View 1 (cartoon, rainbow, N blue to C red):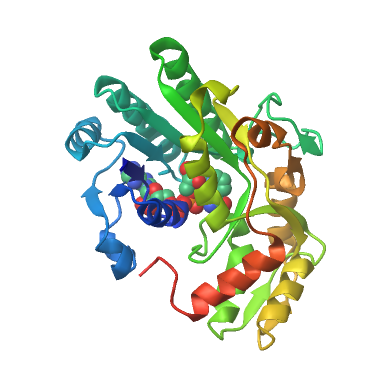
View 2: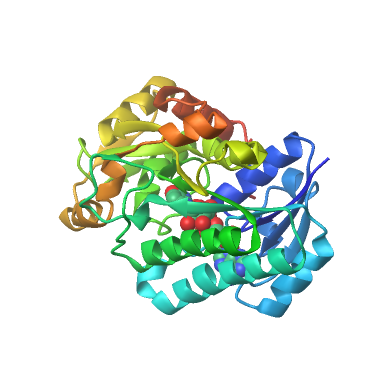
Length: 322
Ligand SMILES: NC(=O)c1ccc[n+]([C@@H]2O[C@H](COP(=O)([O-])OP(=O)(O)OC[C@H]3O[C@@H](n4cnc5c(N)ncnc54)[C@H](O)[C@@H]3O)[C@@H](O)[C@H]2O)c1
């Protein structure tokens, strides 16, 4: 039985990953700076929790040493718009935090680090199908910090033989996204809120088409990459893709599975401007053929099955946040 640490395990992707690992029979230690009260009680009672700040080296070393884990899923980060409003925090949490995790992993001989990266590592001039090894010139502090983490992980792999693996996530769709954390949160909130019987107002164009990965597939991607045979991996960092959908495609899928949903459009040009300038990469497909070839990556969910599962989990209280 494996024993894993999930940094940022109280966040959107981290808690879904923690739940998946437990279902796979692993022991899970969550390291997070947030209070554990944010986690659903049924998940809280199955994990070990360490409250630590990744920017604090002594706390990280102590937590990793005491946890006696064999794998660290490094998922914790600060995301936009926080990274752009406070670049110093982005540096501290995303860069110093990742350096601390890698150093603790090296010094304590932990087997593997699996890292969550992002398509924000590219600018908007990349091709419509973005190759795995596309040159990276990020325009945001978020993308810049995550790109540095990718390269830092590769450096540790090269210099110390560390087993560093990473996936680049596109827009994550799933229950528990928080308003104001990521401009794309509306794509999940419209499903979440209407499943709870509340009305929702969309501020973007009906035909804005983005690429999504369902939250449960995001957790699977990290876990599947961790389990992959190392000799088969030709890269440290892999693209993963899910499905493309317009705003109206999402609305149509919601209406199919939740016909009582109350959704309106109230177009906001400023919101759309941010989407058109800072999120252009999400309108493009990431070429994940290397992930499919090297570790048999394949998403389990389509837009239709993701929306149905999402609504079901919200309405039956099966989501993972308290
Ligand atoms: N959500 C998306 O659409 C998306 C897309 C691409 C990549 N990602 C990446 O996936 C990862 C997880 O994203 P998420 O959506 O779950 O984010 P989230 O904000 O929901 O979770 C991040 C977690 O990290 C924790 N954290 C922040 N600073 C910390 C610190 N100093 N010490 C310890 N813990 C700290 C937070 O408390 C939180 O629980 C991130 O690395 C992000 O860059 C997310």
